[in-house]
Image 1 (cartoon, rainbow, N blue to C red):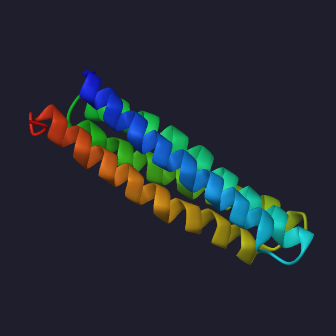
Image 2: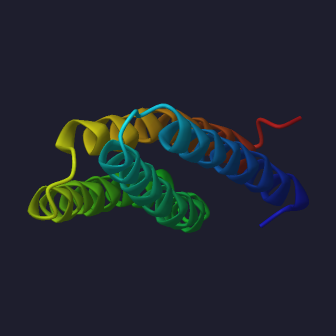
Length: 132
C-alpha cells in the first residue's frame, strides 16, 4: 500500500475512533437510567467493534479490486446483522432497555457506515491514480 493509501486509511480510522468515542460519551451521559445507559453503551460498543473489523476488511479488499470490496460489504452486513441480534438478545435477557441498545448501535453504525463508504471511495480513487 502506498504512503498516500496508508494516510487515507489512518484518516478514516481516526474519524471512526472519534465517532466511537463520541458515541460512548453520549451513551454514558444521555440515558436517564443505569439500565438504559448500559444498553446504549453495549450498542455503541458493538457497532464500534464491528466498525473496526469492517474498516480493516475493506482496506484489505480495496487493495485487491472493487469486486472484493463489494463482497466484503456483504460479509460485514451479515456480521453486523448477527451482532445486532446477539446484542439485542443479550440486552433483553438481562431486563435492560432494548430501545437504548438499538439507538446506541444504529446511531453509531450510520456514522461509521458513512466513514467506511468514504474510505472505499477514496481508496478506490487512489488505486485508480486519481490522487494526483
